[in-house]
View 1 (cartoon, rainbow, N blue to C red):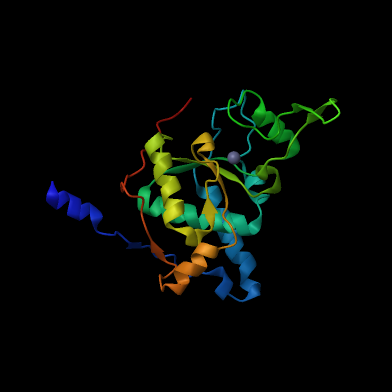
View 2 (view 1 turned 60 degrees about the horizontal axis):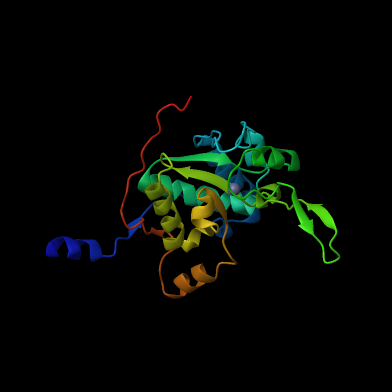
Length: 220
Ligand SMILES: [Zn+2]
């Protein structure tokens, strides 16, 4: 057991080659658009399907929904997911940008929190009004992603991967209450600190369990 403990305590850092597109910021502005196009193509190459948590399939994972993501966020998300797939395996995109109509569609039957769902709110004067908040998906700054087959362990690994690799600029702010929900993280404070410590941006830290994602059988 002692030997095993030592083995697990060795910090594991993998280097994943990111090709020539490692840092879009280093490229001249003229080639930035093509890099972003490349990232969108990568997102579209990933498996995509309905999460099954709403009453019906609102198809918010299609090309049209990927195209409407904020470009900086789509770039961060693509880089994060590419590294995650290389290290741990399988991911599926279940929802990207949503129009207001698509947002209320996904809220129908959704058991968890849902921003598009109308709520009755009592004002200070005692009047009841209907409130409908907007989701980050409507601003194109949220992406729902299932890790592997979507088990608790697989999601934990993906959340960890985001925490361990803040250089990608994404996080899962709602944690266990909405496990697939990914957003851009704050204005890169952590990555600045990492850079100051001399940690190269292309060093990737895998999640602690080194788990390989499972692949779903057909879900029909
Ligand atoms: Zn979401």
